[in-house]
Amino acid sequence: MLGIKLPNPEFNKFKEWAEETIQSHYVTLPIGNEKADINGKIYIVRGQQVMLDFELAEIYEYTTASFNRQVKNNIERFDDDFRFLLTKEEFDNLICKNYTSSWGGIRKLPYAFTEQGILYVSGWI
Image (cartoon, helix red, strand yellow):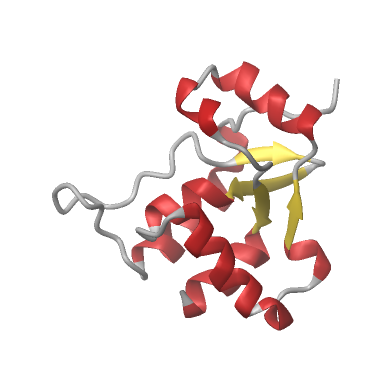
């Protein structure tokens, strides 16, 4: 077991912080004027609370490729521990736990963004 768990009520502090961060930047989704819902989008990987690149891209209304290109263009703002590439085993474990078929078309492994990484992204995306 890799120690990857789904979020639970103990992580409300991080969830509240992430919601506040997202609400202050591009809070509307393409359909309607509802606030971005990050429920179920915060994961524990390698002992850290993270969000995945394709879900952050969706929240900010980018394609995943465009979102990651923006990050690469601003890579000097990122410390090495602000994001990391998931291993195939970690990603497969998340898919199994979430049984989300929409992840089936991903060709590259996603990046996981830590709390600090999300904060940096929200400041300039």
